[in-house]
Length: 263
Image 1: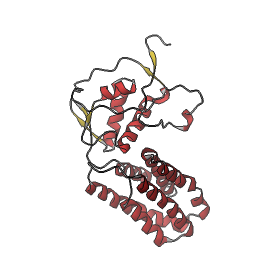
Image 2: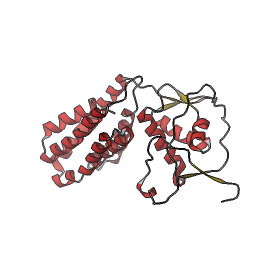
Image 3: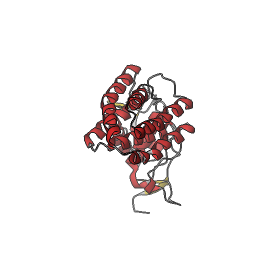
């Protein structure tokens, strides 16, 4: 043990742990190093605050990164409630870390439109309505439909076939009702498709729009598993249409996928 640093087991996580492949090492302990006691609130009031949900286990190799992914998953799952305010110190206690990495992760989420800063209190989960979701779907369609139609004319069938495992990953997550896992695999599939255009700026814009469209709607019911399964099936159908260079079906599927997405 390093002098002045205490090593402790992390608090149980949001749902199942989801960590990058390079961190999945047999016997690797789920631990966090706390470099000091949780910080004072810095003016963030922690009383009369809704209880923070259970947290995912945080591995030592990247505390802030793991907290960011855990918070994103909690937002998609609806465990962090739209309209409610959460303070970094309280969430830090649940993670077993100081408030600093939680605050940094929340600032990133604020830039993504998932939360907003509430001075002297913490972060409020942003309330999104159907109109905003419809607007995001329209913008995504304006960007992605022309790109996919162009790619359908030029990309060989073998390249599209290479993306099938990514499409199947969405169906696997949907089959078990893993909303956070589905959100990740959904973005991965669309990112891989658009990457074939070779435009990094396009990827960044599309990724931001896609992530924003996955934040939960205010007072909206959680998507049923059947809706996730139907949404995931469209990925495989889209691949088949791209392989066949059926431009009419590609255009129809992409537009319907955006407007009827379960996330």
